[in-house]
Length: 465
Image (tube, rainbow, N blue to C red; front, side, top):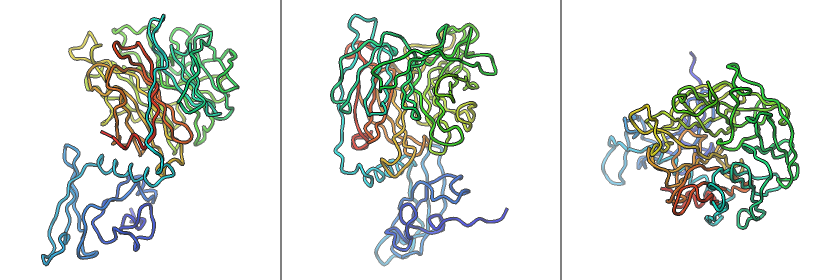
């Protein structure tokens, strides 16, 4: 294989994101480049560079060695004159973790973006209370094409709207029907509430930003295993809201996570090993829907998101896993096949007090929220937000939001939203970067309330823990 020329920012130091290296403030110093093997192969500049050590002998440093320790610590060793005195060069090591440098890069991106002068924003309020109902569960939230925030409660039976970015909300309104989940069609501007697992699958379409709804029959096509329609219908009720694909050959496709319960369309624990997640997609604006291939067995409840290169990131709850790690899969064909199955190194879920009665250790998991910050808010791309109670293997407390600034490769930033009861959640981001988190909780008892938290990236980074 012949050598391949790489950009200057990987052979010699250059300013952030590829500017002239001669004029860089870190020129001649010991600098780390952060990126992927694909960046190198495709001659891309990577994510960022960071100055590790200051050289007091100009460019006379380098000859580095790097070692990754079992706990994730990176040790970088170099020949360098690191003191401004009469001493000569030394061999010096510096230690850091990639999560530390990713967090620094996240702050850099926000502080050098169009939202740099924004004040940190955070406020919460209760949108749905138990009242005369069994509970206040079933949280889904989307941003309508006209900017109205639509908060759905009680499993898409009720709705509240905000026209002022979550400051005030309309009274709770019964929709008069029950759907499963919500998708905003970015092509038509319609909002769809889908109900694919009913005896007669249907959806409810709004052409006026969520104020009126018309019922339409739909066609569900089963996957290769024969699941998705009939005796084993696909269920999307407990999933995160759906998306419209904006990249690649399937641009415009409607896509949402779903789950299947073979062999008996039942959630009994004796069937958990047969349950699996999937996706549901439509290429004709919602008239016909195809069920995808499976996404791992033993999974249930999921969230998915498209990245800027067209890949689909799929994050699953795992019912039977005692490591309490979220299960991850990827699609490279617009959501029909999911491959590269793995466990997350950063994202965990609760286990107690539900447990797999046939096992010996707690396991159960929980649904999470997921959204992507719109392009153009900051210089970085594929900024993802993820929400879940932050108690690995424990019970449902401490709703927390994580942020990834590299399309889920790492999740270096997180901040507590609510230290009390919390469970299922749903995330949405406005065109200006305002973030909306709708989550189940309660002051004295879980599921008594569903609350909204409104915040921005400045707040998230200001007190990240």
